[in-house]
Image 1 (cartoon, helix red, strand yellow):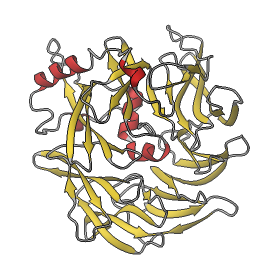
Image 2 (tube, rainbow, N blue to C red; image 1 turned 180 degrees about the horizontal axis):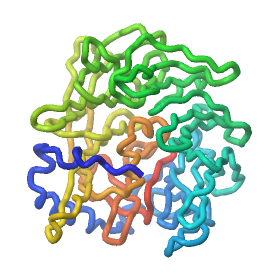
Image 3 (cartoon, one colour; image 1 turned 30 degrees about the vertical axis):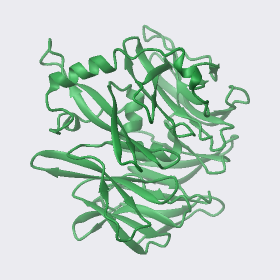
Image 4 (tube, rainbow, N blue to C red; image 1 turned 45 degrees about the horizontal axis):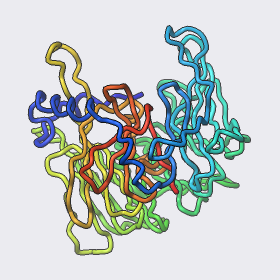
Length: 441
C-alpha cells in the first residue's frame, strides 16, 4: 500500500498543522477515545449495506447499526509467524444494483504472493465466481460497468511495466486487454459502451486522453488536447460533457468539454496537479488546484455551479491542502480530508505518523464542520490518495446521504467508523476492519 508522501504531511498549513504537539493531543483525544454507541444507532433509519475487509483478511457485509453481519468469505489465512499459506481478500466493490460484490483474492506461501484472482459473489457469499486469475499480475481498482455485466481493472506485471486495462464478464470468461499505459486512469461513460481514459500522466509525450469503445471492435478516439498533470477524467452523469486537465500556454487548466473535445469552458487553473469530480446531479463541479509556492503546497477545495455561466467559483477552504473529497449522493454535501502529521515526543528521530482530518461541508448552507482527526488504516489511505479513481467505482457515503464510512486506528485497533453528516454527534465504531464501502442503493 502507498504511504502519504512526507512532503504533504510536513507542509506548513494554517488551521491544520500549526503546532505538532497540539495536533497530537487532538488526535489522541479524538481517535483513541472513539466509543461504541449501542443505543443511538438503533434510532437511525437503515440505508443500504456496508462491505468491508476484516482484520482477519476476510470480506464481510454489515448494516450501519453494526448488526446483521455476514461473512462473504471465511478462509483467509494470515499466519502470525509469516510462514505457510497466505490468503486474504481486499477492496470489496458493490455492483451498481447492489446484487453482487467483487473483490481481489491474494494467495501465496511464506508471505510471497503466487496468484491473484478477481472474485464475484452474491452479498451473502454464495454463487462465487472466479472472474479472473493470474500468477503474475495483481488486479487493482475494480470498477463495475454501469449495467453490472462486466468488471474493469488494472493489472501490472512488474516494476516499470505498463499498466493494462482489462475487461472481464462478471460471471467469468476470457479477459480482454482494452488499453495500456503508465500510469492509467479511466471512467465509464453512463451508457456503458465506452471508457474515457487518461494514460501516460501529465507532461509526457505519450500522455493521451481518449474514448475507447470496449465492446465488439475495440477502437480509440483521441481528443486533441495536451494532458496536464491530473489523474482520473470525469464524465458528467448525463454523459454529454467531460472534465479533463490540459496544458494551455504553460498552465494546467481544468477544462469542461463536449464528447468531441470541443472546449466549452476553462473552470480552474493550477501550476501543479488538478483533481476534480462532478456532483451526482451534474449541476456542480468540485476541484482542488494544487499550487506549489514559496510557502509550500496549497490545494483549496473549490465549487462551481456550471448552470451559472457568470457565477464565481466558491472556495470552501483557505490555505489548506485537501487531498480527497467526496460528494454525497444528493449533491448537497461534500466530505473532504486534510493531511497532517504527529510526532512521538519520546522519539524525536522517529518518522511522523500520518493523520487525516475529516470535514463536512454543507453546500446549500455554506457551512463547514470539522468532524475528526484520526490515523487512517493503510487501506483507507490508499483510497484517499487515489480518491478520484475510487470516486467512480466505490462509495463511502450512505445511499441516503446521512452518513459517511471510513477506517482508522482506535484504542482497540483498526476499525470501520461512521460519521453523521448533519450532526455534532461524534463518529462511532461499527466493527473492527481495514476499509469499507457502502452499497449504491
